[in-house]
Length: 181
Image (cartoon, rainbow, N blue to C red; front, top):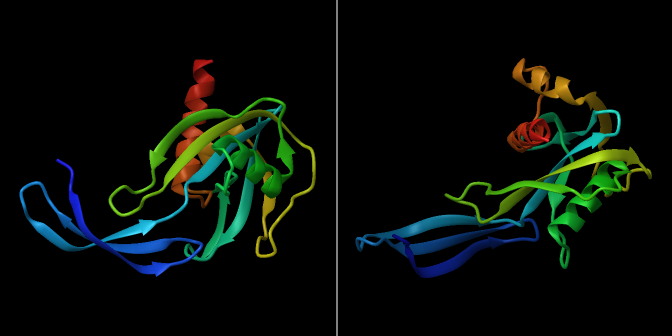
């Protein structure tokens, strides 16, 4: 059932990601000479809810999307960091928020297993409060917005919010998790 990688070469490498060209042999013997794989770091994101049921969102410009997007805090894992440490750091840096409770893992998925190697882990962080100011990188311009947790789904459904798929899926997973509690 698995394919066999016969040859592999890098077309491009960078700290952001790499592009690899594989020559693959399928179980029936067919050979695909050029199967391109994007190698990216794993990502984390979190639905962050304050003690008064406000959803903590970040608004930022996304160049590939050519616009402003309202998203949940997210980022990639740094060296020697657990996923939990990574998401807590990303939340703190992007928003200044934290919580005394540990994040709850909502799930882990491949981003696009057809062409990408990375996964995303989605978390829920409750009882959050603002503890510090943002700690943004030089190239980041992030505006923190609070929104009633229930209203986010309604505004997404009505097309009132420009966001991305991982924010939407994590939101609905968090909503289901909280409904079961």
